[in-house]
Length: 190
Image 1 (tube, one colour):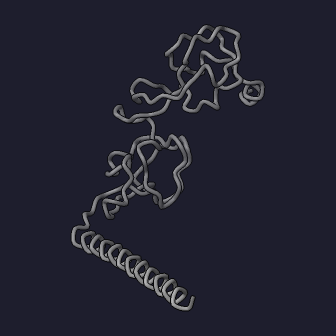
Image 2 (cartoon, rainbow, N blue to C red):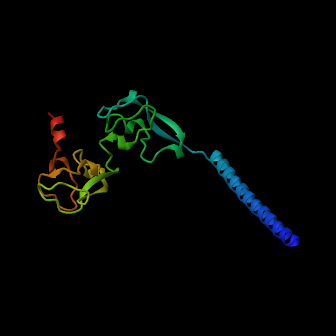
Image 3 (cartoon, rainbow, N blue to C red):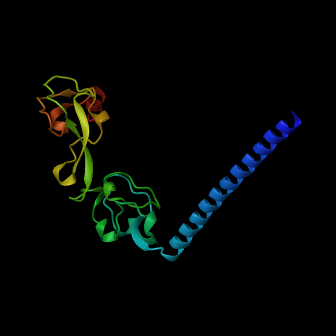
C-alpha cells in the first residue's frame, strides 16, 4: 500500500512540475513576443498629423483658425476619419459639438465630405400613408454622404412610432418631409 501511495504521489508531483514548466515556458514566450513588439514599435514609430480642437465647439458653429490646431502624434493613435489638416476643417460648420482637446473627425463637420460613408434609415417594405412606423418596416443602411441631406434620419429610434405622411416605398431613404412629427416635437418648434 505504501509503495502504491508513494508511486501515485511521485506521479502527481512530476505531473505538476511538468505543467508548471510548460506554463512558465509559455509565459516567457509571450513575454518575449511582447518585448519584440515593443522594440519594433520603438524603432518604427511613424508620426502623422491630426486636427485637435483648442476649445469646445458647439454644434452649428462655423469653425475658424482659433478653434483648431494641427498636432503630430503616432500614426496608430489617429482615428480613421480624423481631419489631418486645419485647411480641411476651417470654414466648415460643426455638425455635432466637439470637445476641447479632442481629435476633430470628418463626421463632426458639415457638410460631410462626398466620399464619407454615413448611416441612414431606409424603408424595408412599403409603409402606407397614416401607418405608424415600427422596427419591422425600417432598417439602418450605409450610404454615401453626397446622396443624403440634413433632413434624412441617422437613427432608427428617430422614426419609430411616427406616422407616414404619404406612402414610402421599399428601399427609399426616409426624410423629415415624409413623416409627421411627434406631438412634443410640434410644440418645441412653436
